[in-house]
Image (cartoon, rainbow, N blue to C red; front, side, top):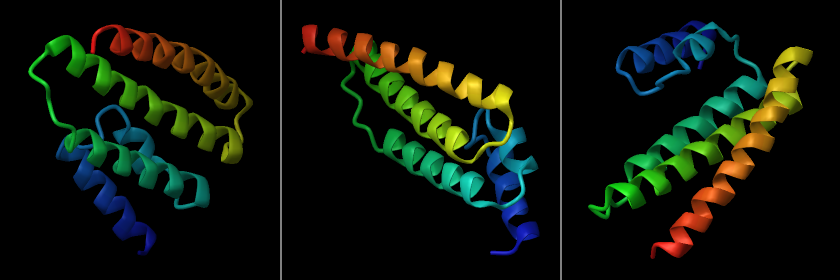
Length: 115
């Protein structure tokens, strides 16, 4: 896929609301391994979230979806650390990994208690 087509696809996805919160970053980045892999991982995670079966229990559904959302944040942060150039963004990615790992543990604990 050429760059302009890839950018057009990203922009179309953004306008459709499929890439909530990441539209600007996805559209602005040039095609490179880190960005492409991060985008593929994000889209895969979104498909998994869309495929989740809701239990009807808002608390459980929130915990399950937030856990998956945080796991996607970890994937993206790891890609930033591996491929990013900005020391500021890498530091933020490291903080995200630390913080989101703790949040995932809290969500897991709550889910285990509330089976």
